[in-house]
Length: 232
Image (cartoon, rainbow, N blue to C red):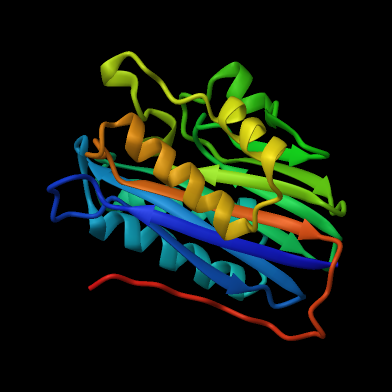
């Protein structure tokens, strides 16, 4: 088996200030973690708060601190520093080889898609169903299963098309795509991002970030690869 992952993102239309950030780090006891955040101060996007959240979380994970404890410490510290004026949507998805599990940590109700055997649906997580108004991180663990795919995305993707009363229907879009082809993880990420931009009539109303993580039943000779395309 191998872990395959891809990221696709775009900034809000005509905005110089990025709100989303995502980074990847290898875990000290085996595996890999992706950390995604969107920070705000007094309701306005803040690149500084976003970067603090991501980098501090990555530092704690690299020191062997569990994802949930890392998220709680980082979010509590940022709130204290900014006198409760700062908010962060924080998501962590880890392929933890020590426990042979997928660990998902998040403090918001933006759902996560799960794909297996051509079926696409939102993960039914307790915090999403009950509503997480406190911003306290919740942690979920799933056994590492072959040919399973997780899709995380920011609020800009989830809310695409709402202002024109044409909200994006991600499960339906992906199921129709999977009926016709077997896309790569990058193909999936690009398709979701392109669809969301289209729902916002070509002008994203918020930063958009998509992360696709797949446990694939293949192995490419032990070679680890990272591909980056960064417009400047």
